[in-house]
Length: 368
Image (cartoon, rainbow, N blue to C red; front, top):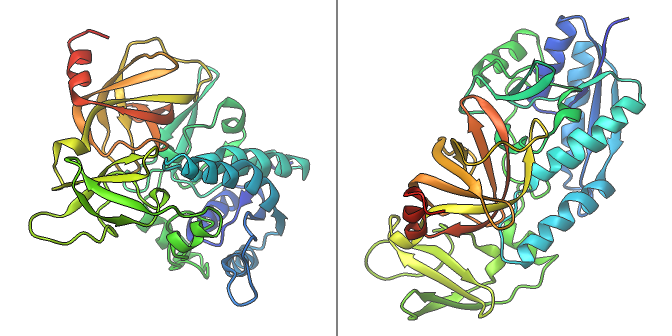
């Protein structure tokens, strides 16, 4: 019998081509569409219905079955609750990491196996290779689309069951394959932003779940410059939406003081207060299941699409300290820091706090 693969079809071109390639390779392919959000869906606006329509059209073209499953409850409990709690703390969470770990490669995987699938596949731009009995998570060939940053929390169990069929392709190649195969969504626009917010206005969406607490915007000198709408709406390094005029360079968010409900800002994109020499991280996840020996020289990303930054990992009070070779801009608590050895994703964690450049200098000289 052919190996049975359940492909997570989102309605987009990437997952559609993943299904196309697997069918061409002789796998027994079934499409599986998951709905993860319905809290504010209405008859007039429900993007999930549009996505499902696109997924059905793809399956009709490929001649494969499409099944549906609703993980809205699991998403609320495992992802969205965390998202709200982090914002309450003044942090900037990355729900996509948790969605992959808890929904796409846990709830979805378990459901697919219950349906009789042997493996699951998605349209992520990443690769998995097995060496000496260990599954390794590798960057996609298309470095502009690589999504290993969002997949670092996957361990050996889900990777042993996962296929990433388009990881060796570039985005233009994916669209060309879709067009050649007559897939109706070959030119469909890519989705952007946080999946459950979509095209909604972020501030109005978040305000429905968390009470806003306006406060002062101040310069680091203490000078009052204006009022903010609520610390939860701002992230470090942010420029837009501050409402501060005047002469000189633009203003940027440098710090959020939860105790006094104050947003501190600085003038100029390259202001020293925006830069840090390193960070501490917790909730560490290692792809192989085993933490590496420390200290470790490797590379890291503290935000998506950032070029790899050389660094040293060392033991911290709770988990790990990351000391960058060069100061980094706008390191943001709550975001993910992901570690790499060349093209291999080693794992990552959640940024707890940034470390000052002076502390970085001491660490670089060996005093840590």
